[in-house]
Image (cartoon, rainbow, N blue to C red; front, top):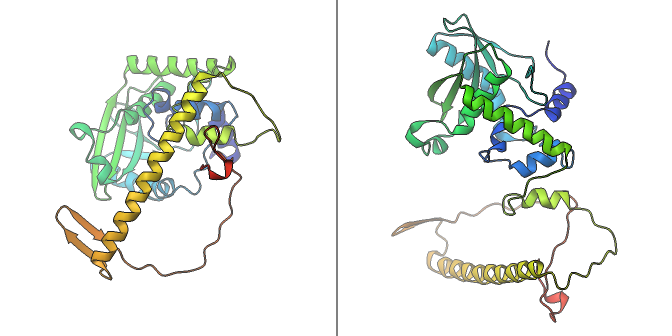
Length: 303
């Protein structure tokens, strides 16, 4: 029986799924461990994938890719519509794309990926990234009787690659320990340290609201003073770089004038005219952030 969306979202909230496991090992390019931790702890909302273009097209193309894999590999596959919870590890579960049945090696899971050729060309030795294999091993962990799984990847819309993986007890043991440690850290309220660069959006969301009129005197806090000085230096560097960029753009326009496309040694310049039009949008609440050097007027500061 297919799950209702509300049921699926509840299961997703209470489990580490196969598409999330890479974050536990720092291998997820889109989500950090810090962000995942606060999502599962209920401090941040789960990502809304309804408007994600990659997710949309992946969902649309998945049946066609699955059919192509079945025909090319000579497999019989069927869509999996159930959620599989790990039999002994609470908080660990998976939703498989397809199941391979009638195979001499027994049933196996099939995970489907639709990958841009520009991304796949950077795969070392032409092999998919480790996070994909972790996803397959996570699914095998949730299905103890399965001995193998497959990854089917459509690259650039016209090149199909199929990778088969044997059950790897060592990898599964590491995944299970990581999941157990993750949920224990939530129970004990021990969040991981953020990556201040990658986790800035998560930190901004966590600390979006303020206490009106609140003031703290942190004079004597050396680390905060160092960070403010670093922020100010970076702001000045950014401002200087922006001025250099604007000057270079002005000089380039004076040379190319009304030409749309220009080639020069080592560079190609594209400068077409775009039609104007009315633009409107709703701005989400955000937290104003400015740092001022001591003695500087606040109106001269920058965010």
